Image 1 (tube, helix red, strand yellow):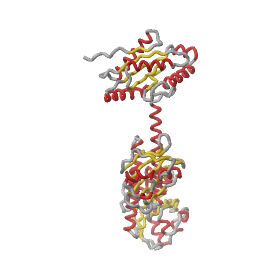
Image 2 (cartoon, helix red, strand yellow):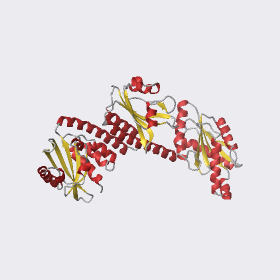
Image 3 (cartoon, one colour):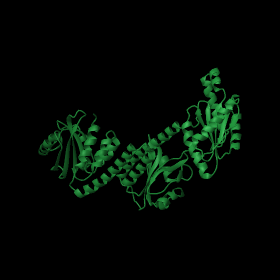
Image 4 (cartoon, rainbow, N blue to C red):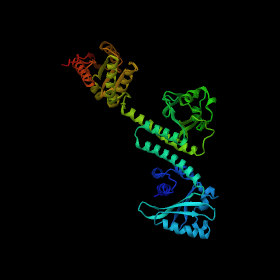
Length: 483
């Protein structure tokens, strides 16, 4: 078991007991962040007035860290590899050694006044057990409580920050919905920034600009920041891969003006979202009051949240890719039967609402099995791909051609009556490549008809076209009148 796996959960438990009310959320967060050096730096090195050390049974320090070291003029390398007796005066080392040894057997908390620094400290000591339950190390968290009110205020803010990170990561881990993850990142950003508005911007589908993928605190849908032309703060943060802080929004250019008007913001921080050093988005927080400068504690927190935003963006792209794969036929690139069965009820619903019609056609390549047997399956696959491309080029943008299965295709023609649908299918049959012929059956939706019945009539018409000699289009019989 690695040192981080011991330190993080123990550190969480220690902080809970420091009596400055960091809250149980910190322990839970640290247990989930065992392997992240960056988050260790943010959560431990920036914990105000605290020093954390891991020591072995000989009271030799294996690891040291925390902002409290600088306050007493020490560095981690001054402590690591040395025993307690080499670091402290004899009497102070003897006093602490007894408690340190006791910590190897169980948890301990004590108050201590250091004659070396003249400061008061709260120490929390906790044994660290490996995977087999054996204790060979312990952790000591030392908190300078000399200026207690200052410490309480600083730790209170730290608890808010940690809680925001915890909630963001819990949402990312617990929800399969990419949009929920994006929103969670925005919520975390506005919490740590103390800002009423936050938004996550991502590249548009064609990559020409940045659009709002998620926002909290303001309605920002539809906003676009072009990556060319007049520069915007969002584009500058994105292309430069560096944060940009705007203290006074009154002097900003026209490209960003709508953002400030919708958010009623006076100041904003535009923070790039990076993946392997390359910008993939921008995380922005906006304050309605004027902010003179960004707090030093905010920069590392925004770094962490931007990293989580990158996870949310990646998960969203993966989700969209998987959805496309699940609805696309691998061979032809057309929508598959699943996509067809999802889309047909929608088109029928649109026709119902708009008081229009819709036609369905089922098309089948004639004698395809013989073609396959004579020329081989690879030639058959090439024919299917060429047929799909040829037919697709003859259709309107909103028609849906799908590979229904094997050499059979389905076609949805919104807004078409039967006569117009027959003309459209005849164009497809004429475009069939390699001098192959095609048979088709067409049915016009009867207003009380469900999707399965409509497809069934078109399929029956296709069967009749085949039985009548193939190479023809057959309109379906009228739908039966319900009693």
